Amino acid sequence: MSTPRPASELASSANRYLAELRRQNASPHTLRNYASDLEQFVAYFSPPGSDPPGPDKITALQMREWLGKLYDLKLSVVSIRRKLAAVRSLYKFLLREGTVPANVARLVRTPKAPQRLPLVPNAEQTNALVDGVAADRFEKPHPERDLLIFELLYGCGLRVSELAGLNLDDFDTGERWIRVRGKGRKERQVPYGSKAAAALEKYLPVRECRPGERALLINCRKTRLSDRGVGVIVKFYARMISGDASLHPHSMRHAYATHLLASGADLRAIQELLGHARLSTTQKYTQVSLTDLMAVYDRAHPKARN
Figure 1 (tube, rainbow, N blue to C red):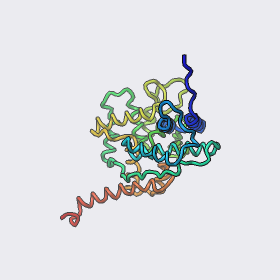
Figure 2: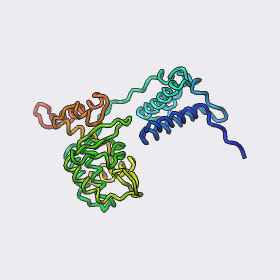
Figure 3: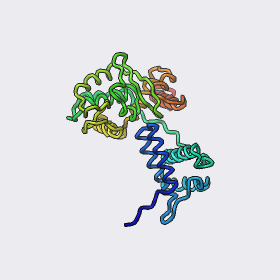
Figure 4: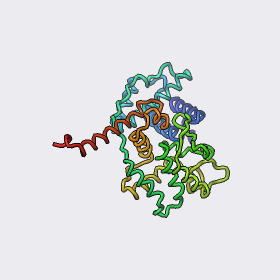
């Protein structure tokens, strides 16, 4: 029986970095993506029959060739940017560790992402969707949970990972605040309204879970509902009620921000509610509002028509 080959220095470095991310309590979503991206990175530099170079031997030119291969595979710019970010983070860790003399991944230019406005359902469409979930017409096994999902996504603008990560003790039901753990495990306080409160009150008595389970949202196995599970639920109702399977949990977050802005909310306040580190990230919703405003102008103003 042959002895399996030991992991290469490059693979071991990636594994050490992933272990460090776990110690830092990185989100499951981040761990899953970084593990996949770094595995592909190691595979590219591991030709059959030979060992890959150590991380300190990979040059900026080789990094650019790897990036070129990603383009050849017809990956989206967003995917390429994420993979490059994962490798840069790996090298940042190795630089701190003293394994490499420099972060050569920083010498590779980041591909420019196309500026695309998020697709946002209007207030009427969004409310019709949430009301359709509340009507409970589809004989789903957990209608109270499903309604709470929509009330928190649209009513609080949560990311899907933030929603799936909520625990029972994150709710202050007296003051109607939720403790939310966002990107980088940064915590923020988010208020929730009367409809979300009513949905929560209706759900808690029928919530069935395993002993000691702290998660708010429970799946059919009586453990925490995953962010992927939330996505499946949202897509089901979107398809059945709105006839639009392209809607996803982040669509509700976009709708939350855009509708707040359209109703006169301050951009800085929306930034805080969404947990954006930079105001520029929040400002894309002003572009959505302006696009909607121009559409109204084109339809309604006599000078807009030829």
